[in-house]
Image (cartoon, rainbow, N blue to C red; front, side):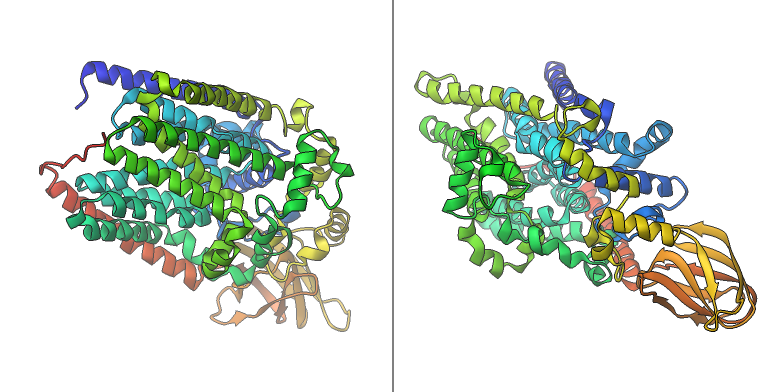
Length: 601
């Protein structure tokens, strides 16, 4: 147990982290998630849809009934749900004043910023010095990729939340080396939450805690500890299977291949494509108008900024490593510094085209889409190196390094504050062209085309004018009966329209075709109430649901029951929970045994 004085220090430090986080994210508390950022409007839309269905009893919304102009969509099957769950917590208080979901999504990011600072602080406390841990956590939350890029430029709420869980996974790794009985449970839970935040980034991160345990365990315990950490991460995957299994198995039901094609292909997203692009980046950095540079795309300025963010973070990592190597005589801390610096250089290598052969060899890497996402690990490396170098920064022989680090931290704060001014249309400082580009998306609540169900005519309807025409000629959530000979076929009335269950009152005079203005998605079923048989649902030429219905008066139920992957995922998660409970029970039983603390100095 900490002494009263240490408890006071810890409380003060956490209060400082909370205050700094609020200072850096205050625009999100007022305006919500940046509406002109890359993904902000997606998270606002999903926050609204998810929260609305959640608070009406749908505890894990997967089919969002009001997206895509009201035609529905399966975004919840594929996109990680944790950030939407967090947004839903604020909905009862914000929903009445936040019809677009902007504030709910923004508050989720603010909470993530606060928690990421706290979890980084708790992790870095295991290095020993509380002040060093505070400085490391400040560097963690102010690093440009963490805040300026992820929040204000990209609005990447899902990826942003992995910053909350990575420190806890690494803390569990360190505790496992020290012999803690709770380490496996802690790693499993933290990794499950990371997968529910952003599975591809979490997958790429998995080798880091395993390698850390392998490198820093005692020789006689190395194999055992490495096996336990691997098992803990696999248990975390099992805990998240309720979401993960359908998201992986059922990808063929939507246009998810578009995630890895065209502009989203990782081969088009290296930090620098070639010498010519590097030359154009330098010219842009020196003040050239992007319109005068041949071969540049609309996101070229963002690529230049990403290169600058990556290199500045790497320079700080190298400086911290140099301080540690120059001043620290302890072999263990020198080895830890070498581990984190080497990981940073490896991540930089994977962000360049030089690593393309490894991306092909490691097939799962293509799901990362953007190599620059490995900046998440650079930020982790940065935070880990701060406490390793902190106690040496006041020594005269490293004053140059210390001055550079202080100036860089001030520059990062300036970048974060500057970035917070942009990408908000409500503040009147956003790009007018981007405002005009996003207005149709805000109005129609359109999902990205790669989230549309097959066949949903995503390519034909991605143009706003085409979608408006389609909506006018096919009113969303309307139904109609048609007979082949164009005679009067009867009437149909909507009795109930729920996300995964639609009930229709059918008065059919003859055999007819029922068209439901609702996107077709494989798995929907139709049945007449009171009968055991099922009617086949097929997609119309426009990607809507059609059913051949018999004559008569009856209630017709259209529903999307849990498919095999959903049911299997639920059972895998239940089994994993039982295993987790067993692991926790074992840790509780042997909790009184002393823990071997490994020195970090």
